[in-house]
Amino acid sequence: MDGDTFRHWAHEAATFAADYRETLRDQPVRARTKPGEIAAQLPESPPEDAEPMDALFADFRRIIVPGMTHWQHPRFFAYFPANASPASVIAEMLSSAMGAQCLLWQTSPAATELEGVALDWLRQAVGLPADFTGVIQDSASSATLCAFLTMRERALGFTGNATGLSGRERLRVYASAEVHTSIDRAAWVSGIGHDNLIRIPTAGPLRGMDPAALEAAIAADLAAGHRPAGLVLCIGGTGTGAMDSAPELIRIAHRHGLFVHVDAAWAGTAMICPEFRDLWAGVEAADSIVLNPHKWLGVQFDCSAHYLRSVDDHLRTLSIQPEYLKTHGHDDITNYSEWTVQLGRRFRALKLWFVLRAHGLNGLREMMRNHVRWSQALAVRLAQEPGFSLASTPVLSLFTFRHDPGDGRDLDAHMLAMLTAINDGGDLYLTPTRIDGHLAIRFQAGAMETTEGDVDAAFQIIRDTARALS
Ligand code: PLP
Image 1 (tube, helix red, strand yellow):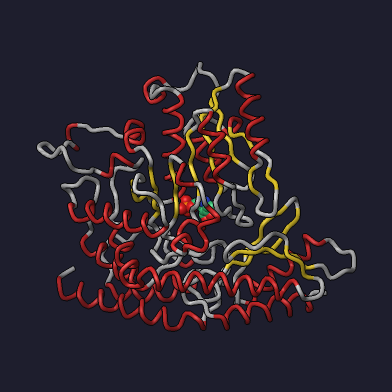
Image 2 (cartoon, helix red, strand yellow):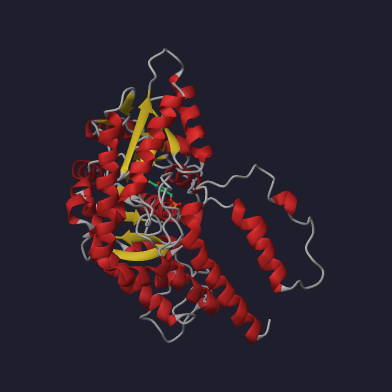
């Protein structure tokens, strides 16, 4: 592709991006396509000869765009948000234009140095102490895997990488049933094993881990000859926003020498608002904390911030330096590829820096405060409607609800029917969760373009759907 052609299509791509954002509100939130429909429109084999860019662009518009669910839609109330603020989209375009590969300082010095600075800004913004050092991971799942690996190595005196786990005592890690499945995966992939991920019962309205039950589980494992290795705290669980109470749990963990990892993937960035910090008070005593700027904060996926108390332990677990990656003559630099499982690294710090500067912390705080206010007002309003009840205590901008028409029908089937009708309507997108064995619908306000009017519209649609199905 010559320079003029590249310039032309880069402009077309930018025009598409602006048009897409402007017309998003008119689109159904969730893709209206059936499994296999998109693939059926694509040739089975790759082209032998080059195709013109206008053919590619036409197929992109005709086949791909209609097959997408619109995460930036103002009425996306499903899962957790994956906000891509326009500033972060522009930063991604720039980083993509450079095709940067940021594995070592010398392969992209500005990317490495910006990563350190932007993560330190974010650390200050969420109120974590200066003895935490950050690294950008592709996802919270990767950060949690690294934490499990460090947990494992610490418990084994840093011999596990060399000799493996076979023939050793069982390592035990403790977490509640409210944690995300990335914790389960990390237990499998780290070799600790799912059977050694011990579920601690929860109590209270925020479904936090019961400290007495944690103490008892550790005591039982020690008595059985197992090796307690780690504790995972849930700060904003995916289902209902569950919150473990950090101070006492971390005290117990540290008394037994456990490594503590905090999964605050969703709720962590809300700590830029000082009034929400009570929810995670005490996490500053943890060893590892993950929070996702690629969720609520507006930094386009992927960008996960992983804060470490001991960089040394982390590097003892992950770092490897073959000759071809050595940076002779530079002993005082950071090579972030030694901090992550993957070697090659994208230039993710650019979009975090752009977002923090383009919105300022006050702009981001205002967005989050609005979401929390609107979502909590909707929870109160829905709970006052006949047949509706909240299924969990609202946390930040997330709540869950059920509806009972009062005629003795199967309520799980009714909730599923409501959810399907709402989502097929195209005006909202909501997702389910299961609470104490029963299906409930989750509502979270988090999309950057959401207005109070969109949350009002959600109220009407949810209420009218319940009435229509009763
Ligand atoms: N932890 C929590 C609480 C989550 O809700 C999610 C995803 O939604 C994750 C971890 C995994 O995040 P990621 O997609 O960055 O791996």
